[in-house]
Length: 422
Ligand code: EPZ
Image (tube, rainbow, N blue to C red):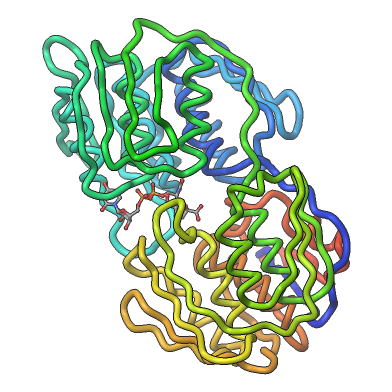
């Protein structure tokens, strides 16, 4: 079994190049289905979730060619709808995008239930509301979600999302780009990866305006062509390394970023007493390891990103004073608290709130990565703690971080990946 071993207490110095954004690459990979042509995607992160999505498409008949570690071509001309493998689909949340993509191209979709990190219930009722607004019928059949367009095919419609759901916004966009007529999505998610998907689809000939705002308009077209597209940098990966530098102390530059995407993380680190300097496409974090406790409320973009919450939980566990984290997006995203407690952290969780009493120092311990960002939080805690930390179940971390061990070693962390073959 693979584990990550860390000897804590080393300051970090140097530069980390940030990879392409997992949560932008995933919808764009599934969106290739809509073109029925060849697309070349650049700055694709080499992470398990992305490679699994490419495998799902390949198994469905797409031609997937890895041109380089971070560039892939995807030709979906020969792809067969409704043939995705349930055992693969059940391993990631992004496979829900198959519903919108298959419905948009073939007029019907059948996809097994998706998986993903366990934060409590992760329904798709808002996705369903969007499909129904386009005249489609949604049912559950033989352990699959089934969506079928109306007798006249998919017709543009208007949907108001009760929740600014990233997944629902993406799925409605995918279904609507080839529908007959205009579609509007009100209370749409505004994340940068929604904009990236819209830019990709527009480069393929779609007509989408308003992405990045809460009101998106889509005018259906009859077909899409292929294109070559570069994925945006991963703001969560960049934020994770910024927090690691703050926790361990030292001076680290994350490069190839879009500083605007990082503004809530930057502001929170400055509030904690960390020095953050930003330039065109890089941000430098300088820290002496002395941190002030702060309160954090996560919310939909442009609010504080929920995907940075566990990482800050680890940082605040060794800051001065008591901090309160309020999780505004998911029901249960504090599963990492029990793991941090094994390192001496004092975190009291009550529903969507956690109070953290900062400690002078955490101490290394054997811990488990219970979900993707919780795994990153364990690494951050291990870097700052005294002594050895051993993290198991690290395959979860490899789902969303491209060579996190190598990148941290590159800035002086005493961290390594071991495989005891068990
Ligand atoms: C995406 O998940 C991301 N995953 C998550 O990142 C991220 O945390 C989340 O967006 C929020 O930013 C991918 O992009 C693959 P949502 P998604 O639909 O689409 C509720 C990571 O660490 N909801 O915006 O599933 C839902 O239960 C992962 O990279 C409904 O009630 O998130 C949640 O409470 C973790 N009904 C809230 O909305 C619905 O139909 C936000 O969910 C859909 C969602």
